Length: 203
Image (cartoon, rainbow, N blue to C red; front, side, top):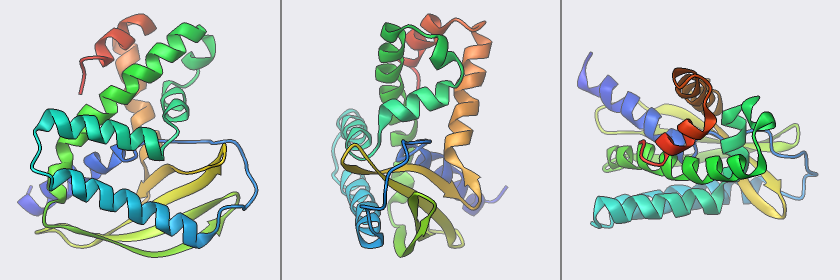
């Protein structure tokens, strides 16, 4: 596999976090508009670039990435959606512990890959309404790679504008991360407490 394909794959994995993997926020009316949806995505991209170009230590950068996820994403919804049916049978304390562990896991797992953004460019192209959310289309260019499309799905939830999924060339990142968490849980015999403990150090 050539280096440009490796770079592109690494970017795709990294972009999951900024996302990564939000889904099924409660239905809301269109108080959000196309301009606001585009502005949200532009702000997220600008902050990602500011972090990776900050020259800070990796530890500090990962803390900032975790804060970025908490600010622009409903991390509770992401985490429980990725946990799937097991979230319904979990206790309240298990759900809270899983969400907290998941936030750190996501920040570590994908935050380390954002270095591949350096020298690249993400341009917001347009935004359009789809059902009860907005799809913000971007054109992404990394060094040594052909441009490719990344769609951010943005919705209002609880008075905040959040992106709840990303689709990279037709691949839903929410679905990918749910499969990852499901495989991790299966490998631990369905033991949610064990998964939570391992997630605290994973990524």
